Image (tube, rainbow, N blue to C red; front, side, top):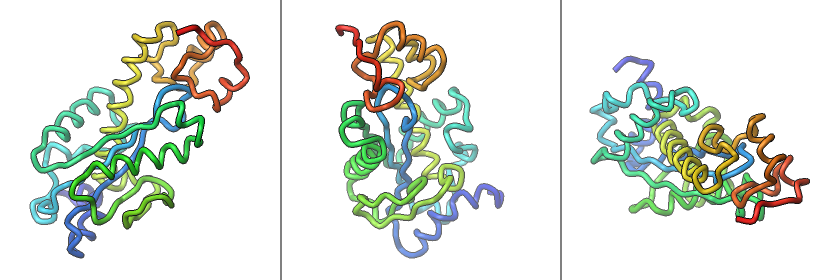
Length: 218
């Protein structure tokens, strides 16, 4: 494996060398949209990769935003079927986001994903800023989804899961274009909100939803 690829496994390898065999990467998808849940994923790679190296099928794994939809789906299939990789996925819906704010909802989803892993991770690599509510030892990594393979894996699982959910919501609430924009504030989406008013999965605490009074009777 080239130095470029080893570098993306450096944080995991350093922890494995310390005897921490259960290292999870955590990331989220969906903090910015006007509708739908925020989804978090946690991924634990086998510590045997300290010597064996990353599965060669995952070498192009990167921040989900840097991958095409087809690439994300391919990596999702590999990650979720791999016999040595453990993972968990959790979400926080729009109602919870409105009640406790998007940052706290994101952290709650991250913690919920981690709590599903048994045995629990000994250390967590988190994309972005510190998560004060995280009870497990953790290391925040700015742009971690491009610096850590396990965070990148979590990024892909969260993104693919959320995109699939938004396609389901598109069938439940037609007319908003959720399958295309996934809830982000595109001109198409904003026009649909003006035309129809918000639906049950819109985040009422987010502008420009907040001033909209009318709601479709779903």
